[in-house]
Length: 149
Image (cartoon, rainbow, N blue to C red):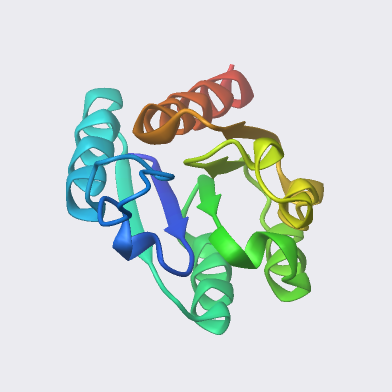
C-alpha cells in the first residue's frame, strides 16, 4: 500500500490567487491542489490535500493523520501564530512534519515572525509560493525514505 501524506491548509488558503496584492501568488487553491497531487503521484504517495477555516477541524485532521498518514505538511496560515491546540496535536504526530508558508513570514509584520507550529516541525519552507508546496512534498518523501533505510 502507498504511503499517505496529509497536507493541511488553514484559514483563507482557499482564497489563494484572489489577492490583488499577490502576497500568496497567482495560483488558485484548486490549481495549487492539482500541482501538489501531481507531485505526490510522481513519488507514488497518496496525498490528502485539505483546507479549513476552523481550528478544531484542523486539529481533528491532525489527529486523523496519526492513524492514516506517515507524513504531514501544514500551512496553518493565520493560526500559525496563535494556536496551541494545533501545536499540541502536531506534537502527538510521530512522522515528519513540514511547516510551509506561501510567503516569507519573516519579511512580513513582526507578529508573523514567531510560529507556534515550528516547535513541532521537522523543517520549515517559506516564501517560495507554490514551488514551496511542491518542495514540502519532496521533503516529506525524502524524510520517509531516510526513516525506512
